[in-house]
Image (cartoon, rainbow, N blue to C red):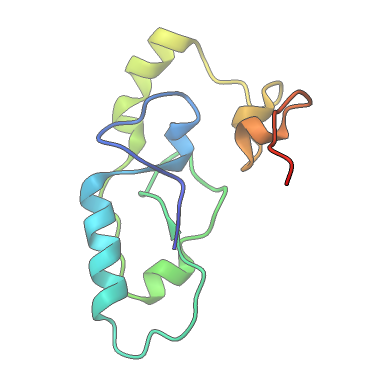
Length: 110
């Protein structure tokens, strides 16, 4: 299960796309634990966000997950605080890797 951002409410503009509400997290875990014969799947944990689209919910839905929440309920507040998101010019908002896509990202070396 790949959970992108699970918090009580989205904390930044990026989370308008990646947010998983606590209630939807419960629904997702319940679906994963109760489906007969789930097999092996890569399941993304996000809510039904209007600004989603980075990941597919198809595998989660195949397990019976039905997200009910949407980060868009918090969009006006976040945009008022941080400005209108511009994915075309901000790689943190454009790419799934977020801050790790930045040139100066500090990635620990093994």
